[in-house]
Picture 1: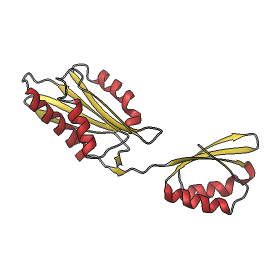
Picture 2 (picture 1 turned 90 degrees about the vertical axis):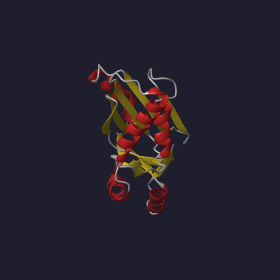
Picture 3 (picture 1 turned 135 degrees about the vertical axis):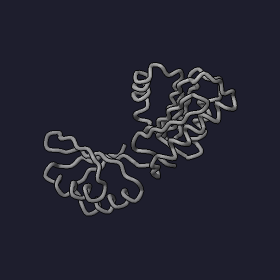
Picture 4 (picture 1 turned 180 degrees about the vertical axis):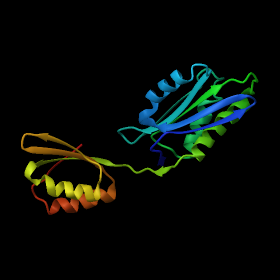
Length: 194
């Protein structure tokens, strides 16, 4: 599986119709779609497709033809995302109609090409499933643990409650193994997993 970490855009023109393709992380999808509708009030279609991993590590998919003939735009867009094995990713294709009808086959090709082109210009990153870990420690032990996290995990959140600190972070299998070795030598940790 692969992911993206930023928004990418590309456009193609087919028989005077312009197809603006936007690839974005799924977490930005709803807001980004709303923004695009405001920025492109004269566009006739806002076709989308997305794939994301839910809390049970199941792939959730959806698509919309947004007024194009059924199966000619949303599904071809989704199939391209599937073909690249993209996850936690959405694509939105904004179409400006040029006055020439493309027909069913022409629409399928146009939307597929638009999504392929934007993915071609994107940086795809291998995806790995990460587990959330939360740790509650006494505030006096924070320095040693933060040093370890900064050296090995890099991104974490902390919340202070009285004399305690709750740290939460996500780890892959390799990072989890390093963390468990660290914990064996650091007895003041109380680990709470979610």
